[in-house]
Image (cartoon, rainbow, N blue to C red; front, top):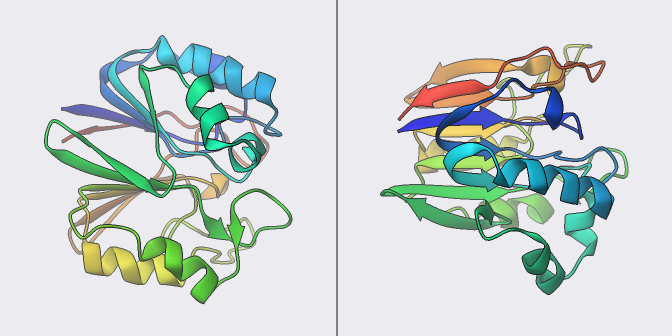
Length: 208
């Protein structure tokens, strides 16, 4: 299966080159300021991509998904798209879990305080997870800011070590884009925009 990972398009999805494959996964920040109009524009584009399966999670810019009711969200998302929010799905035997949560970051959406407040979300991740998608990175892995500060979540890292998914995909820290393999886990920061919000990084393609 050919899987394409993207993240942090921030409303600039139309600047991406044409893509195709079996499954595309977006790791959050589909919009810039989280307004419904921006979300709809993304969903219209996303549902028409040349992929058999399409999955996304929200990110810290995607306020709509934090403020809207479950019913409103379900009515907005086309049936061709799977939205994950501390939830999972299975595609062709691959177990995928997604969460928009990240450690407190200014006053953005889906913020949680480090410690017990955020750990309860990671506790929901099933042991049988092949692909984990979170908006924020684990601590110390593709999470360094331009000032070389590691801002990822240590509790998330500990959970990943226990679950040991084949792939952990995320975004959030644009300048930390890249791939790193550690102890059998392929970590992917799939942020397509750089720190200046310019489209500079290509989608990450993986043959699963």
